[in-house]
Length: 120
Image (cartoon, rainbow, N blue to C red; front, side, top):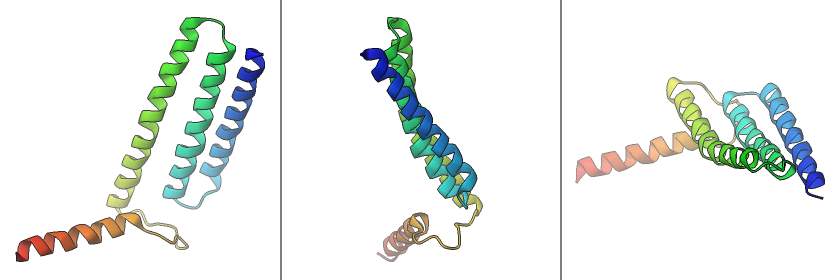
């Protein structure tokens, strides 16, 4: 029963990884591609490693898989945020049909706070 559960998680994880890779190719700009890579590939890789940990009967392999899951969950979103912030700071434009620019709103709020503190 644990092997079936493990292989099912591995299959679902591989599918998420494939969909994330398709998103990397198909999405129009850096920011949308980062979203595909971060969400799909992180979830897919974690599911794949969880499936390996469950399907494998060896404790050392399961432990290594769980350590890798923790590492991926911590580093992948952090790296994607750093890449997105760096791309925005470097001047990489959003897709022309993008609806929200959260970094511009943060910069506007920061400049308003700076101007209010200088006047006081």
